[in-house]
Image (cartoon, rainbow, N blue to C red; front, side):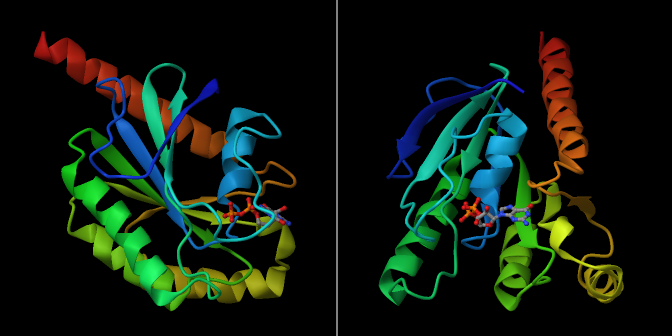
Length: 198
Ligand code: GDP
């Protein structure tokens, strides 16, 4: 997909320049969010792979195929960051979500090797109130052997029985296509909606 970095957003009132649909990527620091954006963009450096986890302090806005915005939210739950800072970041994300009418879908990234953490589950539950579709993206599937996979699969089914789940590896690029197709389908869906509105 064609990715273009637009800008960093430090204040929720700061808006995207165009009225396009938006998707948002959320996840724990170090989950592989920057790597996933690089995989989708098929570029090595569009999103910086963090040298220091949790360093990103803004929402980063990308335009995909000139049709949809991807909002890259700051990673949550990094232990070296102070509580105050963590809350400030959550507030930025929350205020942005509440006030952005163009959001069409959330994607929560989770590390498949680690499995869903309490914080991941809390974030997921928090997002349910917005009544938007939620895709769960498990990263680093290359790091897991069959035995671990069976255990994590069981846990996933317990916590997210009805939700849409993607499994990806930024190393082998397995599953990247499926996620890409999902994003493209959102673009097409939004274009159909526009036609109906005319
Ligand atoms: P972010 O903090 O969520 O943006 O995470 P990064 O993209 O910076 O990745 C954190 C670390 O995990 C880096 O060392 C990446 O190389 C590694 N990583 C990311 N995705 C994968 C994956 O799918 N497989 C493996 N094995 N490592 C990954």
